[in-house]
Every structure is written in structure tokens, then in C-alpha cells.
Length: 137
Image (cartoon, rainbow, N blue to C red):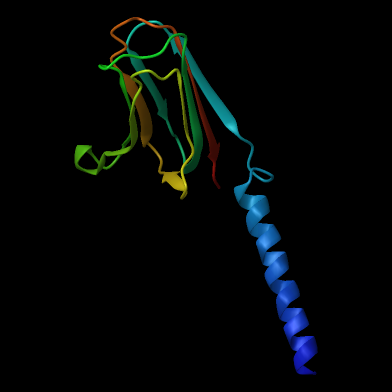
């Protein structure tokens, strides 16, 4: 087999592997699940995971811009205990109405882990939140 043919075959194998990975990670194989919440009091939204899951994004919006006391926190509440909990993003909503969090690296959650989204919302502004995730095999 010539070197050209070997390189061509190796390239085809890599391309097929890339398509398989894309199909697995972009939702073709595992459907997206959207968990929604809304309110006008303190933000306290929790999504609990029964099996291994992948967090894709969090969309948060407020009817009017937040003030200086409005900091949005997104935390992994680990099934392993408080010593493993981790804030994965936080943002001051002062002057903002929207925040979109999309991880640059996979956020894999185990069985009994949870995502907590909290904010004081002292002005009682109406908010909406969508947490987009997938169950993994």
C-alpha cells in the first residue's frame, strides 16, 4: 500500500471519528431537555439529575435591569457533599437584563448532583430561566 493511500485512509478514519463525536455531543443522539422557571421573588431554581448528564447552557432574563445587589450564581451542588460544590459562573446583573452561560468545556454531572441558580432579586423583578441539558448513557 502506498504512503499516499495510507494517509488518505488515515484521514478518512479521522473524519469519520470527528462526525461520530459531533453526533454524540451536539444532541443528534441525546435529546436536549429544557427545564424552565419563572417568578418575581428571589431566584432559587434547582435541577436535580438522576443519572449522568451534560449541562449545555443556561439562559436568564429579567423584565427590568438588575441593581447592584443582584448577583446571579450558578453552582454545582455535588452529591459528594458540600466540600465538592463549585460555583461555575456568577455575574453581577447590575444594569443587565439578560445573561447567557454556555460552558466552553463539558460540564458533566453525576447521579444525584444538582445545578442551583440563585439571586436575591431585591426589586422583585419578574425573571425567566431556562436550563438546557442532556442525559448521557
